[in-house]
Length: 275
Image (tube, rainbow, N blue to C red; front, side, top):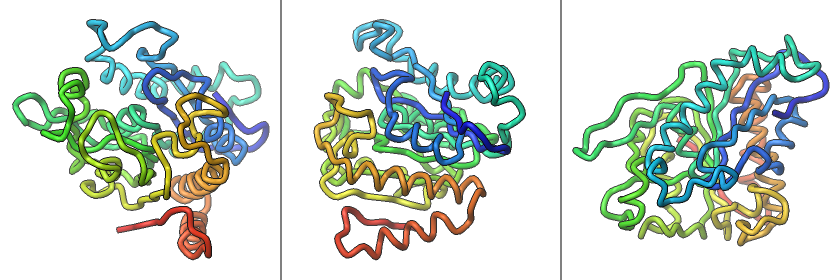
C-alpha cells in the first residue's frame, strides 16, 4: 500500500499485477500515483511466482476468479487496511475508487468494471462487477476470444473469452502498437478490444513502438521490459494520473487538458481516441 504523507479525502486506486508478478512490482505507476494524491493498494495474487503455481498446476485454471475476489476483498476490508497503515486513519474517500491493472491484471480489473466471461456454451457468465468502483484503467489488457486464441490459451485461460458489452464504468484503455501476443493470432489491435466493444471504455491511448510492458511500467530494469523507454513511461505516468484525477472527480479539467496536449504534440509518441 502506498499513500501520500499528507492530505484528506484521498481517492483509492486498486492495482492488479500481470501474470507471475507481485505487490512489489509496477512502482513506476503506483509510486507516481501515490505521490500525486492517491492511496494505491496492490495485492499479490495466487499466480505470483512467489507462490509457485505454474501453468500445469491443477488450481491454475481457476486463479482468475480468485484474482477478482482479491480486489473485491480489498474494497470490503478498507477499514482494516486503513487502520494498518500508520497515519492513514480517516483520510480515505471510500466514494472514489478506481480499479486498474496490467495484462492479466487488466482482465481482473475489467471484471469489477462490468466485463463478463463467455462460458463453454457461449453464454455470458454472471456479473462480478462492483458498484463501489467508479473508474478504471486497463493497461495492455487482452481482447476477445474465439478462434484467434491459440490452443494453449483456449485450454488454460477461460478468462480470455470476455464480453465487453456489459463494461459500463468509465475506463481508459492503454495499448502499444507493437504488442504482439503469444496467446492470439490477432495483431496489437487485440489489446484495444475493450475500447472498441464496450460502452464504458470511452478513451484509448495507443503508444507507437510500445510492446507489452509499454516501455517499462512493470518496474525499473526488469526482464519483462523488452521495449525500455523512460520517456514513454513518464508520459503514461502523467496521462494515467490526469485520467484518474478527472474520473474520480479530483479535477474535472485534468484529463481533457492532458489529452489535448498529448494529441497536439509536435513529436507524438502515440495517439489518443475518445468516443
